[in-house]
Amino acid sequence: MVELEKAACLANDQISRRNDSEQRLDRQRMGTTLVMGLIRAHELYITHVGDSRAYWITRYGCHQVTLDDDVASREVRLGYCTYPQALQQPGSGSLVQALGMSASSLLYPNVQRLMLDEDSVFLLCSDGLSDGDRVEEYWETEILPLLEGKTDVETVSKRLVEIGNTQNGHDNVTVGLIYVQVTPSPASSPALSEQWSEIPYPSPTAPVGAQVSQPAAAEPVLSGITTQILSAQPKTPRLLLLGIGALLGIAGLLGFLFWWSGTKQAIVPEASPSATPPRSPTASASPRVTPLRIGSWVQLNPRNPALLPPLVLLSEPLTPASNPIPGALLSPTASNSPRAIGTIPDAAVLEVISKRGTAQQGQWVQFRVCSIPITELDPSLVPGQEGWIREPAISAWVAPIAQATVVQQGACRKTPSPPASP
Image 1 (tube, rainbow, N blue to C red):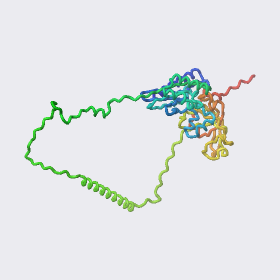
Image 2: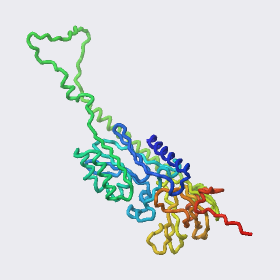
Image 3: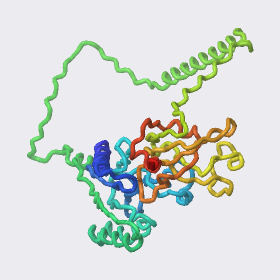
Image 4: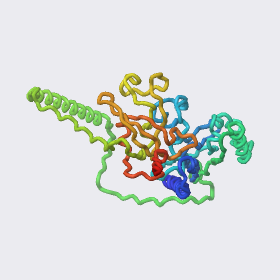
Protein backbone atom coordinates (compact mmCIF):
# COMPACT_ATOMS: atom_id res chain seq x y z
CA MET A 1 0.00 0.00 0.00
CA VAL A 2 2.90 2.32 0.71
CA GLU A 3 4.29 1.68 -2.78
CA LEU A 4 0.98 2.75 -4.36
CA GLU A 5 0.98 5.99 -2.37
CA LYS A 6 4.56 6.68 -3.46
CA ALA A 7 3.61 6.04 -7.11
CA ALA A 8 0.74 8.54 -6.89
CA CYS A 9 2.99 11.16 -5.25
CA LEU A 10 5.68 10.61 -7.90
CA ALA A 11 3.17 11.22 -10.71
CA ASN A 12 1.94 14.32 -8.88
CA ASP A 13 5.47 15.74 -8.62
CA GLN A 14 6.13 15.16 -12.33
CA ILE A 15 3.02 17.10 -13.35
CA SER A 16 3.62 19.83 -10.76
CA ARG A 17 7.24 20.37 -11.89
CA ARG A 18 6.08 20.63 -15.50
CA ASN A 19 3.55 23.30 -14.50
CA ASP A 20 6.19 25.23 -12.58
CA SER A 21 8.74 25.03 -15.41
CA GLU A 22 6.18 26.41 -17.88
CA GLN A 23 5.08 29.09 -15.35
CA ARG A 24 1.46 27.97 -15.44
CA LEU A 25 -0.79 29.73 -12.93
CA ASP A 26 -4.35 29.26 -11.74
CA ARG A 27 -6.51 27.73 -14.48
CA GLN A 28 -3.57 27.28 -16.82
CA ARG A 29 -2.05 24.58 -14.57
CA MET A 30 -2.41 21.00 -15.76
CA GLY A 31 -4.10 18.56 -13.38
CA THR A 32 -5.77 15.17 -13.48
CA THR A 33 -7.57 12.63 -11.35
CA LEU A 34 -6.39 9.06 -10.74
CA VAL A 35 -7.87 5.62 -10.10
CA MET A 36 -5.88 2.40 -10.49
CA GLY A 37 -5.97 -1.24 -9.37
CA LEU A 38 -3.22 -3.74 -8.55
CA ILE A 39 -3.86 -7.48 -8.11
CA ARG A 40 -1.65 -9.52 -5.77
CA ALA A 41 -2.73 -13.18 -5.41
CA HIS A 42 -6.27 -13.08 -3.96
CA GLU A 43 -6.13 -9.36 -3.08
CA LEU A 44 -6.91 -6.21 -5.10
CA TYR A 45 -5.51 -2.80 -4.12
CA ILE A 46 -7.46 0.28 -5.30
CA THR A 47 -5.83 3.75 -5.27
CA HIS A 48 -7.60 6.97 -6.26
CA VAL A 49 -7.21 10.76 -6.11
CA GLY A 50 -9.99 13.13 -7.18
CA ASP A 51 -13.43 12.12 -8.46
CA SER A 52 -12.50 9.16 -10.68
CA ARG A 53 -14.30 6.14 -9.26
CA ALA A 54 -14.01 2.36 -8.86
CA TYR A 55 -17.08 0.06 -8.83
CA TRP A 56 -17.26 -3.58 -7.67
CA ILE A 57 -19.84 -5.57 -9.70
CA THR A 58 -20.86 -9.13 -8.75
CA ARG A 59 -23.86 -11.30 -9.59
CA TYR A 60 -25.64 -9.83 -6.57
CA GLY A 61 -25.13 -6.08 -6.96
CA CYS A 62 -23.02 -3.03 -7.82
CA HIS A 63 -21.03 -1.30 -5.06
CA GLN A 64 -19.12 1.99 -5.31
CA VAL A 65 -15.72 1.36 -3.71
CA THR A 66 -14.20 4.86 -3.74
CA LEU A 67 -15.41 8.18 -2.32
CA ASP A 68 -14.95 11.36 -4.38
CA ASP A 69 -12.42 13.96 -3.20
CA ASP A 70 -14.78 16.91 -3.70
CA VAL A 71 -16.43 19.47 -1.46
CA ALA A 72 -19.83 17.75 -1.40
CA SER A 73 -18.44 14.38 -0.26
CA ARG A 74 -16.31 16.07 2.38
CA GLU A 75 -19.34 17.90 3.82
CA VAL A 76 -21.26 14.61 4.03
CA ARG A 77 -18.29 12.73 5.54
CA LEU A 78 -17.92 15.36 8.28
CA GLY A 79 -21.66 15.17 9.05
CA TYR A 80 -22.60 18.73 8.09
CA CYS A 81 -25.44 17.79 5.72
CA THR A 82 -26.83 15.07 3.48
CA TYR A 83 -25.50 14.48 -0.04
CA PRO A 84 -28.51 16.05 -1.85
CA GLN A 85 -28.17 19.14 0.36
CA ALA A 86 -24.42 19.31 -0.26
CA LEU A 87 -24.97 19.30 -4.03
CA GLN A 88 -27.04 22.49 -3.74
CA GLN A 89 -24.17 24.48 -2.20
CA PRO A 90 -21.93 26.65 -4.40
CA GLY A 91 -18.75 24.88 -5.49
CA SER A 92 -19.98 21.45 -4.36
CA GLY A 93 -18.24 19.75 -7.29
CA SER A 94 -14.88 21.43 -6.71
CA LEU A 95 -12.10 18.96 -5.98
CA VAL A 96 -10.25 19.17 -2.69
CA GLN A 97 -7.23 17.39 -4.22
CA ALA A 98 -5.95 16.25 -7.63
CA LEU A 99 -2.63 15.32 -9.23
CA GLY A 100 -0.39 18.20 -10.31
CA MET A 101 -2.02 21.01 -8.35
CA SER A 102 0.59 21.33 -5.57
CA ALA A 103 3.44 19.51 -3.87
CA SER A 104 3.11 15.90 -2.68
CA SER A 105 3.19 17.04 0.95
CA LEU A 106 -0.38 18.32 0.43
CA LEU A 107 -1.58 15.12 -1.31
CA TYR A 108 -3.43 12.32 0.51
CA PRO A 109 -3.92 9.32 -1.86
CA ASN A 110 -6.68 6.88 -0.87
CA VAL A 111 -5.62 3.19 -0.86
CA GLN A 112 -7.93 0.23 -0.13
CA ARG A 113 -7.42 -3.55 0.00
CA LEU A 114 -10.18 -5.89 -1.17
CA MET A 115 -10.35 -9.68 -0.75
CA LEU A 116 -11.34 -11.56 -3.93
CA ASP A 117 -13.57 -14.53 -3.07
CA GLU A 118 -16.00 -14.66 -6.01
CA ASP A 119 -16.22 -13.82 -9.71
CA SER A 120 -16.27 -10.04 -10.05
CA VAL A 121 -15.82 -7.16 -12.46
CA PHE A 122 -14.11 -3.97 -11.29
CA LEU A 123 -14.97 -0.83 -13.29
CA LEU A 124 -12.47 2.06 -13.16
CA CYS A 125 -13.84 5.19 -14.82
CA SER A 126 -13.70 8.98 -14.90
CA ASP A 127 -16.61 11.26 -14.04
CA GLY A 128 -17.54 11.40 -17.72
CA LEU A 129 -19.24 8.03 -17.20
CA SER A 130 -20.17 8.09 -13.50
CA ASP A 131 -21.97 11.46 -13.59
CA GLY A 132 -25.73 11.20 -13.59
CA ASP A 133 -25.64 7.72 -11.95
CA ARG A 134 -25.04 6.08 -15.33
CA VAL A 135 -23.17 3.13 -13.80
CA GLU A 136 -26.02 2.36 -11.39
CA GLU A 137 -28.43 2.62 -14.34
CA TYR A 138 -26.65 0.36 -16.85
CA TRP A 139 -24.59 -2.18 -14.84
CA GLU A 140 -27.27 -4.90 -14.97
CA THR A 141 -27.75 -4.69 -18.74
CA GLU A 142 -24.16 -3.97 -19.83
CA ILE A 143 -21.70 -5.41 -17.24
CA LEU A 144 -23.60 -8.31 -15.65
CA PRO A 145 -23.67 -10.33 -18.94
CA LEU A 146 -19.84 -10.43 -18.74
CA LEU A 147 -20.07 -12.48 -15.52
CA GLU A 148 -22.63 -14.77 -17.17
CA GLY A 149 -20.31 -15.45 -20.12
CA LYS A 150 -22.60 -13.78 -22.68
CA THR A 151 -20.09 -11.11 -23.84
CA ASP A 152 -16.41 -10.13 -23.56
CA VAL A 153 -14.41 -7.32 -21.94
CA GLU A 154 -13.73 -5.42 -25.18
CA THR A 155 -17.41 -5.25 -26.12
CA VAL A 156 -18.44 -4.07 -22.66
CA SER A 157 -15.76 -1.35 -22.53
CA LYS A 158 -16.76 0.05 -25.95
CA ARG A 159 -20.42 0.05 -24.92
CA LEU A 160 -19.65 1.96 -21.68
CA VAL A 161 -17.67 4.61 -23.57
CA GLU A 162 -20.60 5.01 -25.95
CA ILE A 163 -23.01 5.45 -23.02
CA GLY A 164 -20.78 8.13 -21.47
CA ASN A 165 -20.54 10.08 -24.74
CA THR A 166 -24.26 9.90 -25.56
CA GLN A 167 -25.85 10.15 -22.10
CA ASN A 168 -23.40 12.63 -20.50
CA GLY A 169 -21.19 14.11 -23.22
CA HIS A 170 -20.04 17.10 -21.15
CA ASP A 171 -16.73 15.51 -20.16
CA ASN A 172 -14.20 13.03 -21.48
CA VAL A 173 -14.75 9.32 -20.74
CA THR A 174 -12.06 6.88 -19.58
CA VAL A 175 -13.00 3.27 -18.82
CA GLY A 176 -10.97 0.35 -17.43
CA LEU A 177 -12.30 -3.14 -16.64
CA ILE A 178 -10.74 -5.82 -14.41
CA TYR A 179 -12.42 -9.23 -14.85
CA VAL A 180 -11.69 -11.52 -11.88
CA GLN A 181 -12.50 -15.25 -12.06
CA VAL A 182 -12.06 -17.22 -8.82
CA THR A 183 -11.46 -20.99 -9.06
CA PRO A 184 -11.29 -23.24 -5.97
CA SER A 185 -7.81 -24.57 -5.29
CA PRO A 186 -7.39 -28.41 -5.25
CA ALA A 187 -7.10 -30.07 -1.87
CA SER A 188 -3.48 -30.56 -0.84
CA SER A 189 -4.17 -33.87 0.98
CA PRO A 190 -6.97 -36.49 0.76
CA ALA A 191 -9.85 -36.29 3.14
CA LEU A 192 -9.56 -37.90 6.55
CA SER A 193 -12.22 -40.49 5.69
CA GLU A 194 -10.21 -41.53 2.62
CA GLN A 195 -7.05 -41.88 4.73
CA TRP A 196 -8.83 -44.15 7.20
CA SER A 197 -10.32 -46.24 4.41
CA GLU A 198 -6.81 -47.07 3.13
CA ILE A 199 -5.67 -48.56 6.49
CA PRO A 200 -5.86 -52.42 6.28
CA TYR A 201 -7.80 -54.11 9.01
CA PRO A 202 -6.76 -57.61 10.29
CA SER A 203 -9.03 -60.47 9.26
CA PRO A 204 -10.81 -62.15 12.19
CA THR A 205 -10.11 -65.61 10.77
CA ALA A 206 -7.11 -66.47 8.65
CA PRO A 207 -7.75 -68.64 5.58
CA VAL A 208 -6.27 -72.07 5.29
CA GLY A 209 -2.63 -71.97 4.23
CA ALA A 210 -2.16 -68.31 5.19
CA GLN A 211 0.80 -67.48 7.33
CA VAL A 212 -0.11 -65.10 10.08
CA SER A 213 2.76 -63.71 12.09
CA GLN A 214 2.04 -63.53 15.80
CA PRO A 215 4.13 -61.62 18.32
CA ALA A 216 6.26 -63.76 20.55
CA ALA A 217 4.55 -64.42 23.83
CA ALA A 218 6.50 -63.27 26.84
CA GLU A 219 7.44 -65.97 29.26
CA PRO A 220 5.61 -65.62 32.55
CA VAL A 221 7.78 -64.65 35.52
CA LEU A 222 6.65 -66.22 38.72
CA SER A 223 6.89 -64.15 41.88
CA GLY A 224 6.45 -65.19 45.45
CA ILE A 225 4.65 -61.97 46.38
CA THR A 226 0.95 -62.39 46.78
CA THR A 227 -0.99 -59.84 44.75
CA GLN A 228 -4.31 -58.65 46.12
CA ILE A 229 -6.76 -57.28 43.57
CA LEU A 230 -8.86 -54.48 45.05
CA SER A 231 -12.25 -53.63 43.67
CA ALA A 232 -12.49 -50.23 42.01
CA GLN A 233 -14.17 -47.70 44.30
CA PRO A 234 -16.22 -44.90 42.79
CA LYS A 235 -14.50 -41.48 43.07
CA THR A 236 -17.64 -39.43 42.83
CA PRO A 237 -18.30 -39.02 46.58
CA ARG A 238 -14.74 -37.83 47.25
CA LEU A 239 -14.87 -35.21 44.44
CA LEU A 240 -18.27 -34.07 45.65
CA LEU A 241 -16.99 -33.58 49.18
CA LEU A 242 -13.98 -31.61 47.93
CA GLY A 243 -16.24 -29.32 45.89
CA ILE A 244 -18.56 -28.68 48.84
CA GLY A 245 -15.58 -27.89 51.08
CA ALA A 246 -14.17 -25.41 48.55
CA LEU A 247 -17.52 -23.60 48.28
CA LEU A 248 -17.83 -23.34 52.05
CA GLY A 249 -14.29 -21.92 52.30
CA ILE A 250 -14.97 -19.28 49.63
CA ALA A 251 -18.26 -18.30 51.33
CA GLY A 252 -16.50 -17.92 54.68
CA LEU A 253 -13.75 -15.77 53.16
CA LEU A 254 -16.29 -13.48 51.48
CA GLY A 255 -18.21 -13.11 54.75
CA PHE A 256 -15.06 -12.18 56.63
CA LEU A 257 -14.09 -9.57 54.03
CA PHE A 258 -17.59 -8.07 54.14
CA TRP A 259 -17.50 -7.87 57.95
CA TRP A 260 -14.00 -6.32 57.91
CA SER A 261 -14.95 -3.63 55.38
CA GLY A 262 -17.96 -2.62 57.52
CA THR A 263 -15.84 -2.44 60.66
CA LYS A 264 -13.19 -0.33 58.91
CA GLN A 265 -15.79 2.18 57.70
CA ALA A 266 -17.15 2.51 61.25
CA ILE A 267 -13.67 3.17 62.71
CA VAL A 268 -12.32 5.60 60.10
CA PRO A 269 -14.05 9.04 60.41
CA GLU A 270 -15.45 10.78 57.40
CA ALA A 271 -13.38 13.47 55.77
CA SER A 272 -14.23 16.96 56.94
CA PRO A 273 -15.92 19.30 54.48
CA SER A 274 -13.05 21.76 54.85
CA ALA A 275 -10.66 19.41 53.06
CA THR A 276 -8.51 20.87 50.33
CA PRO A 277 -10.56 20.98 47.11
CA PRO A 278 -9.19 19.13 44.07
CA ARG A 279 -7.08 21.10 41.72
CA SER A 280 -8.77 22.36 38.65
CA PRO A 281 -7.40 20.93 35.43
CA THR A 282 -4.87 23.16 33.81
CA ALA A 283 -5.96 24.78 30.64
CA SER A 284 -4.43 23.36 27.51
CA ALA A 285 -2.02 25.51 25.67
CA SER A 286 -3.72 27.57 23.01
CA PRO A 287 -2.53 27.11 19.45
CA ARG A 288 -0.08 29.57 18.12
CA VAL A 289 -1.91 32.28 16.20
CA THR A 290 -0.69 34.82 13.70
CA PRO A 291 -1.57 38.49 14.30
CA LEU A 292 -3.56 39.79 11.34
CA ARG A 293 -2.65 43.40 10.54
CA ILE A 294 -4.36 45.44 7.88
CA GLY A 295 -2.31 45.44 4.68
CA SER A 296 -0.35 42.27 5.55
CA TRP A 297 -0.06 39.13 3.42
CA VAL A 298 -0.79 35.63 4.74
CA GLN A 299 -0.89 32.12 3.25
CA LEU A 300 -3.17 29.28 4.37
CA ASN A 301 -1.21 26.32 5.76
CA PRO A 302 -1.96 22.73 4.65
CA ARG A 303 -4.99 21.24 6.41
CA ASN A 304 -6.35 17.69 6.27
CA PRO A 305 -9.71 18.06 4.45
CA ALA A 306 -11.02 14.81 5.93
CA LEU A 307 -10.69 15.96 9.56
CA LEU A 308 -11.10 19.77 9.59
CA PRO A 309 -14.11 21.88 8.56
CA PRO A 310 -13.73 24.20 5.56
CA LEU A 311 -12.92 27.91 5.91
CA VAL A 312 -15.72 29.82 4.15
CA LEU A 313 -15.67 33.53 3.23
CA LEU A 314 -18.95 35.37 3.83
CA SER A 315 -20.30 38.45 2.12
CA GLU A 316 -20.49 40.31 5.47
CA PRO A 317 -19.81 39.58 9.15
CA LEU A 318 -22.38 37.75 11.22
CA THR A 319 -24.42 39.90 13.59
CA PRO A 320 -26.81 38.90 16.40
CA ALA A 321 -29.68 39.65 14.03
CA SER A 322 -28.36 37.34 11.31
CA ASN A 323 -27.26 34.56 13.70
CA PRO A 324 -29.09 34.97 17.05
CA ILE A 325 -27.95 31.63 18.51
CA PRO A 326 -24.19 31.56 19.31
CA GLY A 327 -22.47 28.64 17.64
CA ALA A 328 -25.43 27.85 15.36
CA LEU A 329 -24.72 26.93 11.75
CA LEU A 330 -25.46 29.47 9.08
CA SER A 331 -28.70 28.69 7.27
CA PRO A 332 -28.33 29.18 3.50
CA THR A 333 -32.09 29.81 3.16
CA ALA A 334 -32.45 32.59 5.75
CA SER A 335 -33.16 35.97 4.19
CA ASN A 336 -31.10 37.90 6.75
CA SER A 337 -28.07 35.56 6.63
CA PRO A 338 -24.84 36.61 4.90
CA ARG A 339 -24.10 34.90 1.60
CA ALA A 340 -21.33 32.27 1.44
CA ILE A 341 -18.83 33.36 -1.23
CA GLY A 342 -16.65 30.23 -1.32
CA THR A 343 -14.21 27.94 0.49
CA ILE A 344 -10.57 28.99 0.93
CA PRO A 345 -8.28 26.25 -0.47
CA ASP A 346 -4.93 25.26 1.00
CA ALA A 347 -1.89 27.37 0.00
CA ALA A 348 -4.12 30.34 -0.94
CA VAL A 349 -2.51 33.79 -0.55
CA LEU A 350 -4.74 36.43 1.09
CA GLU A 351 -4.44 40.16 1.83
CA VAL A 352 -5.92 41.64 5.02
CA ILE A 353 -8.16 44.58 3.98
CA SER A 354 -10.03 45.57 7.15
CA LYS A 355 -11.22 44.36 10.55
CA ARG A 356 -14.51 44.82 12.37
CA GLY A 357 -16.10 43.65 15.59
CA THR A 358 -16.46 44.15 19.32
CA ALA A 359 -15.55 42.20 22.43
CA GLN A 360 -19.12 40.86 22.68
CA GLN A 361 -19.57 39.91 18.99
CA GLY A 362 -15.97 38.84 18.27
CA GLN A 363 -13.43 40.12 15.77
CA TRP A 364 -14.03 39.67 12.01
CA VAL A 365 -11.41 40.09 9.25
CA GLN A 366 -12.00 41.00 5.62
CA PHE A 367 -9.67 39.31 3.11
CA ARG A 368 -8.97 39.76 -0.59
CA VAL A 369 -8.06 36.57 -2.47
CA CYS A 370 -4.77 37.18 -4.25
CA SER A 371 -3.86 33.78 -5.71
CA ILE A 372 -5.12 30.21 -5.21
CA PRO A 373 -4.04 26.80 -6.54
CA ILE A 374 -6.60 25.83 -9.14
CA THR A 375 -8.36 22.51 -8.43
CA GLU A 376 -11.11 22.41 -11.07
CA LEU A 377 -12.47 24.31 -14.02
CA ASP A 378 -15.11 25.85 -11.73
CA PRO A 379 -13.49 26.67 -8.34
CA SER A 380 -15.56 28.16 -5.53
CA LEU A 381 -13.21 31.18 -5.20
CA VAL A 382 -11.36 33.21 -7.82
CA PRO A 383 -8.56 35.75 -7.29
CA GLY A 384 -9.87 39.22 -6.60
CA GLN A 385 -12.92 38.21 -4.55
CA GLU A 386 -13.35 39.66 -1.06
CA GLY A 387 -15.07 38.20 1.99
CA TRP A 388 -15.29 38.09 5.78
CA ILE A 389 -14.38 35.34 8.25
CA ARG A 390 -14.08 35.18 12.03
CA GLU A 391 -10.50 35.89 13.12
CA PRO A 392 -10.16 32.99 15.65
CA ALA A 393 -11.25 30.51 12.96
CA ILE A 394 -8.37 31.34 10.58
CA SER A 395 -5.59 32.98 12.60
CA ALA A 396 -4.19 29.62 13.74
CA TRP A 397 -3.97 28.26 10.17
CA VAL A 398 -2.18 31.06 8.30
CA ALA A 399 1.47 32.03 8.07
CA PRO A 400 2.65 35.61 7.46
CA ILE A 401 4.46 36.47 4.22
CA ALA A 402 7.17 39.04 4.72
CA GLN A 403 7.60 39.80 1.03
CA ALA A 404 5.17 38.24 -1.45
CA THR A 405 6.39 37.31 -4.91
CA VAL A 406 4.70 38.43 -8.11
CA VAL A 407 3.00 35.04 -8.46
CA GLN A 408 1.73 35.15 -4.87
CA GLN A 409 0.41 38.71 -5.20
CA GLY A 410 -1.74 37.73 -8.19
CA ALA A 411 -4.88 39.84 -8.28
CA CYS A 412 -3.70 41.94 -5.31
CA ARG A 413 -0.64 43.30 -7.07
CA LYS A 414 -0.45 47.08 -6.94
CA THR A 415 0.25 48.58 -10.34
CA PRO A 416 2.71 51.48 -9.93
CA SER A 417 1.32 54.80 -11.07
CA PRO A 418 3.13 56.46 -14.01
CA PRO A 419 5.42 59.39 -13.11
CA ALA A 420 3.92 62.84 -13.39
CA SER A 421 4.78 64.70 -16.56
CA PRO A 422 6.89 67.87 -16.08
